[in-house]
Length: 101
Ligand SMILES: [Zn+2]
Image 1 (cartoon, rainbow, N blue to C red):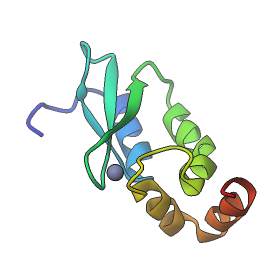
Image 2: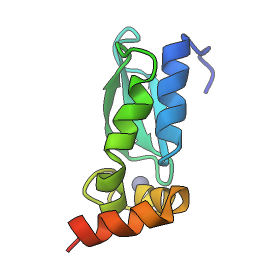
Image 3: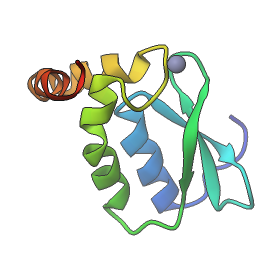
Image 4: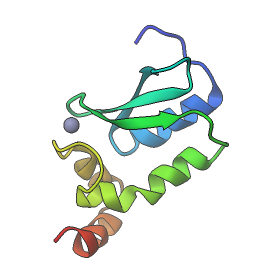
C-alpha cells in the first residue's frame, strides 16, 4: 500500500478490524469510506466510514465479535471465524453455541 496514512481515527479503525482479520483498503470516496477486505483472501466484506469518534471502532468490532465467530458476518472463506477464535476462544465457543446452528 503506497498511499500515506491519513488520520489517527483511520489508524484506530484499521487496528480494530485487523484484530478480527479484516484489512482496511484505500479510501473509496475522498477518504470518507473505506473498503473492508478479508485479510485471508482479499474479498471485499463491507465498508466503513471514518466519521467515528475515538473508541467507537473498537466497540463496533467488539459488538460484531459473536457474528464473526459464528460466521454470520465476514468472509465466506472463514478467515474471521478463525481470527476471533484465536482472539478469545471462550467467547468464540459461546457465540457458536448460541448462533451457529
Ligand atoms: Zn476471505
